[in-house]
Length: 305
Image (cartoon, rainbow, N blue to C red; front, top):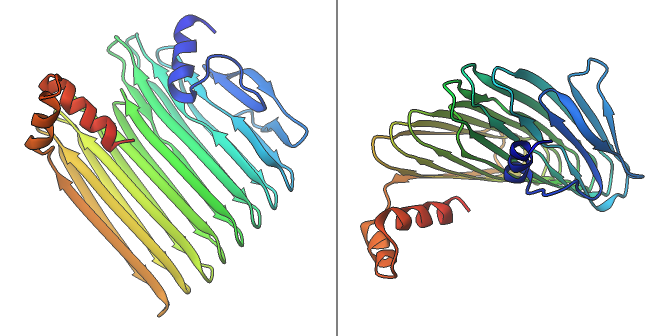
């Protein structure tokens, strides 16, 4: 990888070098580097459009990094990655995609990730999306994440779009089994004329299943965000969703909650708020020596943390 590609890798996966453990680094449509371990096996799909990851029963304290880099203007791809997590595991998976487009053609990455999480397993999933470039070509990303949680399992998801994506449609779908829990913290930052839509569709099917969804967005300049959180309670379960957004300049934000209960013991809650940065927050930081612009940036960083 050249210096630009290494810098993008740092942005999306916080890697300065090849990670310890299992990994697959995809660079402009090809596998740049790959490593499997005794407990985590990474295999190419037969169609060549992605990978399958197999985690053995009882795997603990191991990680798998699968970042994607696109630095060629005009490169477009759809990638399918499927994760098979065994029983009684505790693993961390770091994904994400970075696009640098300095040319005149649009670049696009559509990633479909499917998770099958075995009984009593815990998965920490981190996904970052980042874009940059001086060219006229746009940067598009359309991630889809599908999650199946079996009995007693937990999925802790931290997903974010941190900068530079012209247009994105993000879909997360989860089916939650008995005693299983989904934790989802999603963050989106848009500026200029960028658009971002996100759908989180959660089905609480198992007895004592749970979900806690937190969506945070900041829309600056003339950008637009549209967020839908859809939770169905189909058994004795508990679901909570919180959608908080900051609107700036001429930005537009639409937040749509949808709760559906088909069981008398389903407990579902949704909270939503859209507002601007409070003037007293900026004033307080400016008294500490920051400019107004620096104060705004600090507040946004804290809000999206």
